[in-house]
Figure (cartoon, rainbow, N blue to C red):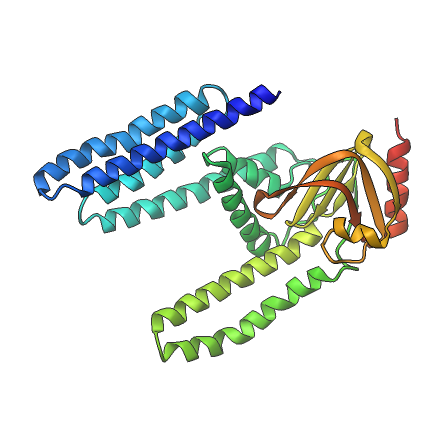
Length: 331
């Protein structure tokens, strides 16, 4: 197992180093040539390197061993094409068009992929967040980049496209909300109102110094509103689930941990010392779930954290504890 993990990391590291070396060397050599005719010739060769050679290395080192999907090669090739435009003078318009097409293509691919998965599984087993993450991971070559893009798409989905959605509950599981007593969801829901109220005054004040800066601030404020609404709605649409042989702890987009039944050591009343493992942090938990051994919980942007226990504040404490008791007694 350790050898397999080491081999995966070694392959990823080697590809990233080779990719960066090719892009940096070709870019430096191309920009160092002053003669226009010669530069075009060198730029053509450099474009071949960053598009074809890098894509071939990606296939040989990551796709062929089964570490990445074949579809993710398109993202690598498109990124190479976009970078190749910097080798040519006066290519700003082409670069902007390609960047827009790449972004539109990625958005379209994710939408089609998610809708296809949702239609295939009509029982409710498909979590929109997991569907979005899987779609982005299939085309994004670097896991860290995939996590960032997935977070952006997920927030936009919950902030703009989930108004008719019902809370996701897998078949055979019982949902339990864990956000009302904490009050964090109310805070995220109230902050957008404050952002909207201050948006217009800030815009008019900044416009006296710079109209461009005023519009940038307005756009950032609008995007912040979408983020806050998305985070607030995700609390309601992604409750914790107690299945027949697992516990899936979910706190909106900020925390999730799927715990098999055999990994639950015990469930007890939370104490003062359990605040260190509270979800969300600095809350007053009422129930603490101890694990047999540490597990990796997933937070926002794919950040993973090793946890020994998780302390929560379920809105229906008695029903939640009863469900966990039945789960631990089940064969």
